[in-house]
Image 1: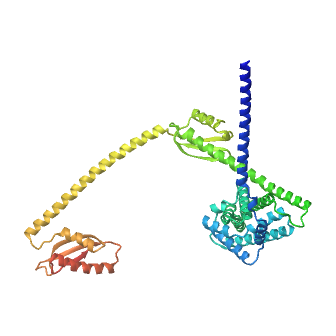
Image 2 (image 1 turned 60 degrees about the horizontal axis):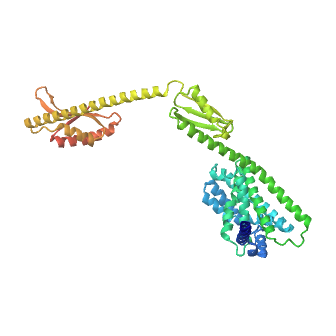
Length: 489
């Protein structure tokens, strides 16, 4: 009996503990829920009237706004032409295109027909003027060519949709806040990049490249629609008051139009994103295949490789011979669906050495290297012998001249004079000196000092004559001679 009472009490205590745990968990969840609501709720910090007034003030396109737009167009065009990211960012910040786009989103949210018409008209004029100005710049400017800044704005995908949408949400949350956050507005202007796509479209028109034009305009339309859509959603979420002449039918019609336009722009962008993603997956798996199946294989010497994603082919060029068994192994490794699921339809195009194997080439290389080293040793020995012979000749010349000096004090060191003459008088190819016996009356014999000079054939006679006068004077002084005759050889 006592045991039954204990069990019953124990069950009651257990049930009470469960109830307390549930109560505590519910209290914790309510606390977390309250905290999150307080953290993310921004409705109390919204200024409806100031937000509407600020958006409407940025819609008109006249006076200073027109000039600012033109200047922004030229700044962006120059930045795109110079491939300068910093200059392009500057054009994004000064561009007034954001005003009419926010006006479109607000007019849909508030069912304000007049604001919609003004925003659409001003945006159309801005787009037309921007395209015309950028077209003129790229058409007349001589240095215009494709670069990364231009090419980056002709192939939009789903990421551009997300950037425009979330950027627009951030912009409108900042716009509706009491005391607008200027840094957020500047950041959204840079992220969504409205002006560069328009200038890129103008570049496409100027160059007659309509694929560039259509791609850039598509990116601009994506940014425009999803910024406007984000504006619409934020204003509806914050329960901005509808315009006084609003009616349910028109509001629903405009909401439906906005939804249809947004989806029609997003669908092709999604397909583009999927295509880009698949190509990226293929490139990643191809690189992995080359690295893990080929480069680590010590029996394969890969020279280079290439790929064609459209044809689904991989080209491999090997230095060594590739037999049929090796080719089959490479094909089987590529067909591994678990490791390379995106390469199932790819084909290999293999090119190996058709003449000599790697081992034969290595052997031939080693032999030629040994022959080259032997030739270098022979050349080194010959150079050493040549140096020794030159030293011997130099010593003999010095000895001959010294003996002549001992016998006749008037004899000079001819080797020194010859070297100095070559340095002093450019164009001397050869020089000689001798005492020549001469007789005019065939009775008396005189000794005549004679210098024989061979000049470079490229020198003209007038220059040689001038050089010979100076050379004669210098030789007479150096050789201590009263007279000296010079003869051309």
